[in-house]
Amino acid sequence: MRETRLALALRERRERGLPILDLTASNPTKCGFGYDDAGILAALADRRAMTYDPDPRGMRSAREAVCRYYAERGAEVEPEQVFLTTSTSEAYSWVFRLLCDGGDEVLIAQPSYPLFDFLAQLDDVRLLPYPLLYHDGWQIDLEGLKQRITPRTRAIAVVHPNNPTGHWTRERAELEEICAERGLALVVDEVFLDYAMEGDSASHICQNRADVGHPGSFAAGEHPALTFVLSGISKIAALPQMKAAWVAVFGPERERAEALERLEVIADTFLSMNAPVQCALPAWLEGAGAMREQIRARTAANLGALDEVLARHPAVSRLKVEAGWYAVLRVPALMSDEELAVRLVERGVSVHPGYFFGFGGDGWVVVSLLAAEEEFRRGVEVVCELAG
Image 1 (cartoon, rainbow, N blue to C red):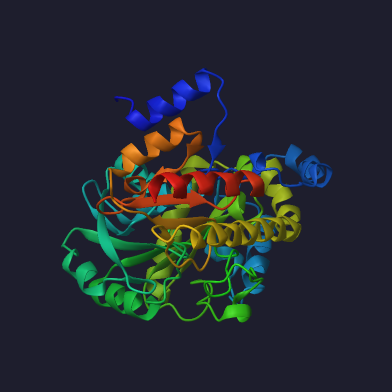
Image 2: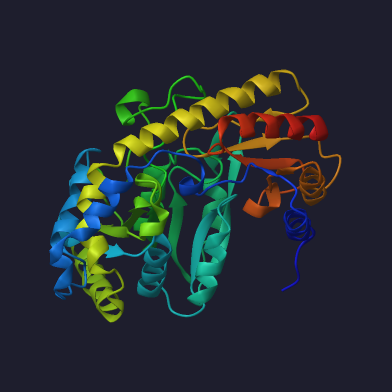
């Protein structure tokens, strides 16, 4: 695979030892947050991990902790509905294997995170995009989605809230109706569920759905279609290195029972999650609130700083963001997104060009709100000076 111009520019700058303001930062362990190192590591010292007692679904104590997480968010989930995985990527793979034969299709929104394409290819699944439209906020083009359903379609996937657009999927009822009528499954990725913002304001990052009335977890409520809800501690507890995630299964009784039985076979084949992490998961989930508060404060501050800079650069604007760690900027399409990103690297700033997430045309820049505040402010100043 050939190195892109952007990748080459970044590599050359780093090899020359030149500084770069990283507005693509998505690894919380490298963004200057304060972790409870002793508490996090102490949770790995559980002596139960010295006994090998495999369960395809994962240790019950860990699955019960996941159920408590959902109970705090208004969803009743039983341990038998939960399968532990080492990552949401692995959870996707298991669900793809469960639902699809080679060449079958899964529909997913565009723009969206590009990792899904690679995951689907590894499982010989065709990933087909359905469009998101922006008009004073993001919406699913439901008619466009329906037109993309074929006899080989097996599922519709949504990221709730979406990455990178940061919007909530408010079309749940319509999606469930489509899935129930067409015999499709609904796959919902909720890794950013706990990072809601108050409307479009940077003044307050919300603690729970009651703060803003956002749609909440797809784990809650009735499930007229077979539904898989994915999440994990990579975002919930800002611990991507600990490799702990899950998939919870919902739906009509017969379909759900069959899916649970078949998913257990897949899980039993891999038995991928190690015992120390499973033992530690309840403690990590219980203590995750402090990390989420730090991240909410950081993203709120950076969103506020971004708006202050944009007020001085009217040619550049940002789209509404309701949740998550990213902001999408609309810039004058005076050059390709790649050319703009390369020129920014030459000026010492790294951003995501819009095509990375599947934005159509040029004039799109995506920035992470996780970067250190001073670094973020200086970086977006350069973006606006060059792009605007």
